[in-house]
Image (tube, rainbow, N blue to C red; front, side):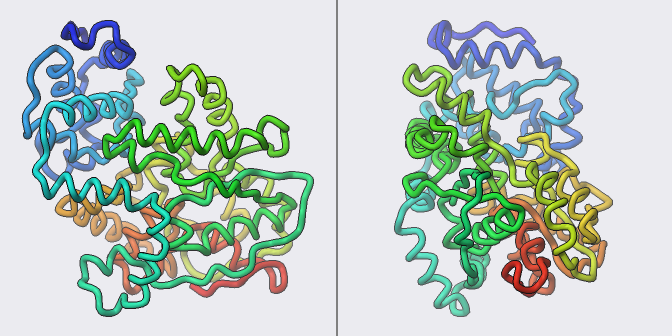
Length: 417
């Protein structure tokens, strides 16, 4: 697809990147078949091909409207379209460029702006933890819409104290320690049982995705730089072999630090190295499984696994969790229909676009519950929280919590599901 950039975008880094991405697009429409919002709405402008056309128009100088903004807002950034695109169009990068430009040109209503500000400033804030504790203490009194965003209080169990020659950095995250602290503790225990020590740099915080995807891209990049600064001494001294992510949403962002900071002279090389070292927790399973095989007692019942979009489409990691946990005796199954589609969580999407997020959630749960599972598992805090809000009868957990709970007595914290 050829485009002639408007003068304001000619010669800019964004303009060149967008032009290169658009050049790959042949407008074939394969992407519409796997786009969740197109599946729900049936509107070409609420699919990748239509949004690409809208962004192209803006780059060519057409003034965007509130309607343009709405169609871009409705995109989940699940990147399913990238998995099905025969031309390798990097749609996720293009929509980031388009959203930033449109937001600069189209003012948002005051209430909408306020809501987005609260999310981008509140979720990564140190005040989020105390606010979540308060919400959990009165959870039974909360309205249903708010209750759905406040998971029941969870105990994390003990953090391992042993030291190992093999060490990995782990990002604690901004919301995960407060919402579901057992995920990080279970990760540390499972790694410990496999002879790997999880190290957390206290100065590291939000991966930057929240602000970046709410169009505070400079704020997001500032958080990325802060994390690089926190991790770099350990990386530079080769004290860690990898940076491990147990939230696939954070993982796909940190894997792209190199891309996002490629024009930052002070951080480009460091960011590229951080991206190179970043691994999803599931990528360590080939090392973990042999070490734990004799120590795991897999639970009875079906585990219905939902692979997050950020894992299967953003990071292009498919099948690893199911294959390796099956080797440990878990009855892991993936939905027979639409396992590739987004559950509707997508970071802050379920807050900003509930009229689309909840039908996608219910559609996903419908497919998963056809498996008659005793538990639903996933690999991202947002997916887990969103799915649990619609699944009172079936618990939703991170797969590493299930593995931790299955460790033989005395070898790890047992958590009932």
